[in-house]
Length: 116
Image (tube, rainbow, N blue to C red; front, side):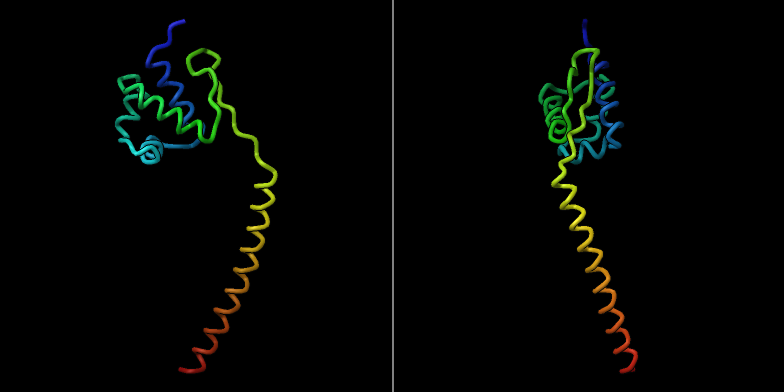
């Protein structure tokens, strides 16, 4: 099987859109121009270095398999249960803090109204 730049570009478009990202998001995160990402996705250019940089960008959060075959697949990283637990604890603490700060703001407002 021969794979073309257009084939790679289509897979990159699929990958990017599956993750809900724009070309600008990718370009900004990688420190390249959106035009460079567009050209690569449209099979109209790009360097091997840029392609490797794109793979490295996606590989930092997802496992991309078989880019150069018909069996292309994106494997989402497993959710770490510890991270979920810590996120839930942090959310609960922030909710409590929000309530406390809101209460303190109310008290300050009452005092300011009395001083007028």
